[in-house]
Image (cartoon, rainbow, N blue to C red; front, side, top):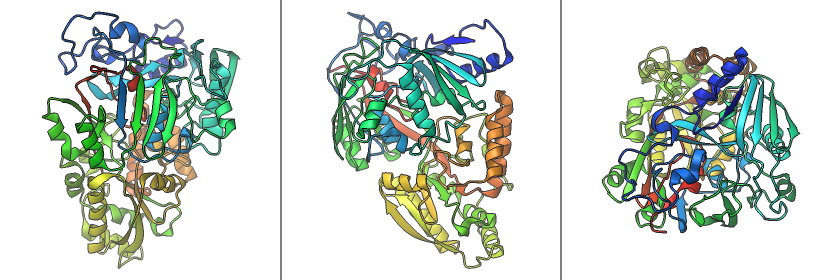
Length: 576
């Protein structure tokens, strides 16, 4: 069965194609996008950036074509200028994307590297991902264990030594996929573990053979798991400090702890983009300073603290969008720590937190309770009523918590360090301090707070080298990936949990081709995980906010928990 892009393709459309392929139905129609604004071809009704007059040149839709969405398809894009963005995760240790699961490195390198596809979303719905062609122009599926991608024949690497502007071929794609799925330094080996082998029958064809069906893999190729890094750059030893890809922007320089500068790629395979001449990724560590820089016009796009959302929403100079997001507030218990081996201790830690108070602290009461799978994934997440039921331990019951601790041999509670991030702003700090004070005051856990900057914390989370407890990140762009957080080698398995029987259960769920059956089995497994509080306590999902100036046109930010800024190539500035 062959598929190609007409416009943005939904994940359900992709997986429906896999199911059709598995059923052996020949001659099926090409799968396009969903109806309505999701296909990115219709103008947004009204909207802050609607064009005021008839276009005087090529329209955005005619330039962008099927490669991206258009808020203003009939507008004439303006070329030139410098687009500046300050990241919400302000510190950056290096540029090798395989050695980190932190968002900023991937958001940064997504401007220089390409992937097989790239992800955007419906114009009016940030929770509805759509997949667009990047290096791949089409794909075929003969059965659930084989994927065939056809590549663009004209994609060139940036004209920088040692790659020197040569054409990208299927061998480059094979190299990048195998490096991401097998290299000992890759944090994504677990995510890509279904890959058995990669064949390259010709320079523009890539055949990916699988050990088992993986419903996440197609979308993984649009995410941050496999950037097309050339072998020459890897072999040069400069991958941590340089970017040489086939993407829309060419890396210029990195002033550490200050800014990364790009310029537009004159040889980019999508003609007519980028619209801006230069791109600056600014590193502004302080949240208040980042917000002030955005308000003053130093940057055009910015993540907005929850406390400032209403002020920006009421300011006519800005456009503000919100989406339900998994916060960096998940509590991990180190699997190797004997304090947490008894499930009654883990259950007690969960029972001793009032989730209602937590919601007020983190989300001003606007959040939803988290289970194993984020509440943003309807059909996968357990209902709010079920999460609060007596079956689980997300209800507040201090007496029961103390009884469990006493029965487990800790009548006076446990003592434990708690690693937290010093980079995430006051809301995060309030959350951490409240947990520590609540546990300590009530004799549950005498907490010693240990603060680290975000890259250091994430390294310890990813390598499971922290002592005791860690409040970190587990946000995922696909529902099944939340199960991988409990599987050995999962990229956000922050506890380091490694239970072979659990791995087998997770693999069994992921290998189910039928969507409805996979959803139901995922819920069943989620219930089992929550009953035992398997080395992780999730708290809330809440709204996150992103804003841009009204003079910034056609910006379509990434769906929640996707680590990419591919939208910058299709964004133009009205004052350029």
